[in-house]
Length: 266
Image (tube, rainbow, N blue to C red; front, side):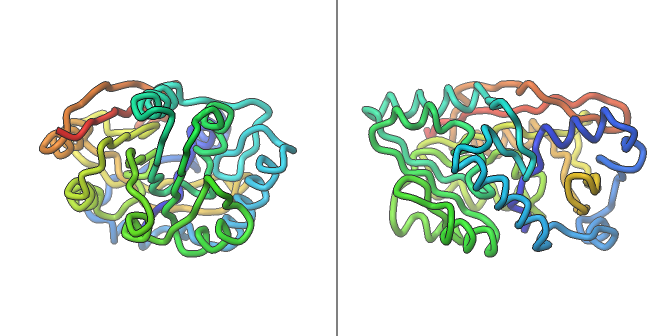
């Protein structure tokens, strides 16, 4: 199961370089398995080591922002996500509990930490791949940021207000089934952020190839039907807001804006 997200920075970098024809998003596969057979994967130790190094740089204050091992000298905020987080925290008297599914080593937490630090009571729970969780537990987590192997592990210890999926759905083998299993937990809010969707009204399976200058990896990914995702969530939730993020990628020469929404339990 794919938890590690690819960032908007990587997607843009792929397109605006001479790697475009060799790296980036391509293909239209019949099944996830067919696409997977042509990929190198994403769980290699070298990826974890790069992400770990970059995250520690941010945590120690030696870098400003990290996304999928890429360090930046300024923070690229997702303002729709941040405003949603602060809105929910304000409605609860400066309290917030987030379940960040596929949250790497806390990228979104560190990205928004300057604002999150103003919240009186904060719990940020990351669910990730086994090796990422083990690393997070050993060298990253603190009183506010914690790492877990599963959603159920989080629920044994706390009651999240927000279930966050930030560019995670495209990397799950069966994203619609996953959503159907999450909705019955009745999280007060579901937030999908910074996620690309198909430009056609259908689902499409592609392969994403990452330039070796970032790390050597390739894996299957979904370009989902946005309206289909919305329809599943709306079975139990009301859509509070929908938004476009600042970044975009290209598929078949067409620009696809990253998108998301905030949903509130009925």
